[in-house]
Image (cartoon, rainbow, N blue to C red):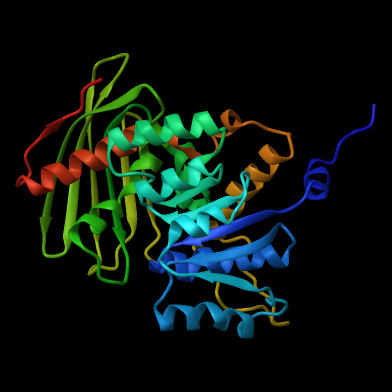
Length: 343
């Protein structure tokens, strides 16, 4: 029996077209760069960008063509009319966007696979509606939880599993640009997803409180072990003023700590000595690449959407993350009022 080379088989089935929507910093600095390199690597065919109207943002995207070798693809720019942009793409293509329920639904209804800058969606009601629509259309909908692919976090996750039942977890996240209080809260999405992934399905969040002070947002979550009924606490802090990125986990059998304040593994923008883009091994790149390759497997008939609930942050595997973030926003608006999460 002949062995099948999966990568080769998928490549022969064709490339995906990608529509990028939104002008947030992550879209400009990371997503557009990764997609252009995937185009160079012949993983992607057509590239469209919608709702990026700031001249400096367009100038930065265009600068990639001058910075790196072989970045010579044509980009189709669309105005703010996302519906027309989406309708120009065919079912099976990809839409990458800043979190937005209406745009995500429009893309899913067109039959596009969707990757969202976290959070994947803002409320549990929207979460359920988008999940149902994705199932109906048979498309993959995920959040770009790139810390899943950070080697330091991946190593720590295995240590956490060996450290016994959770007693306490704390993470601190930082970005070097100003955000609204709501956006600062959403910065914790990656670390919330990471903790859920690390401690496993036997834990569930039962109470959330959130506070803000001087550009700092802190979310406290009480967790219950489904089997033992033991309680534990996690604290997620985010800021655009303090350059700290770290986490600590205290379990019954040990402590796990990592510090990524000097986050050199996120993305590499400096080209190699020959002038080529050299960031393919950085975790921000890997996260997007894994999603695109998953879509290519689905569209080539080598996988189904349900194949990726463990490896990717799919809409069906991020219910608790949405519940915590929605509760956090409500608590913030109500002076730290505790919000119970019903199960």
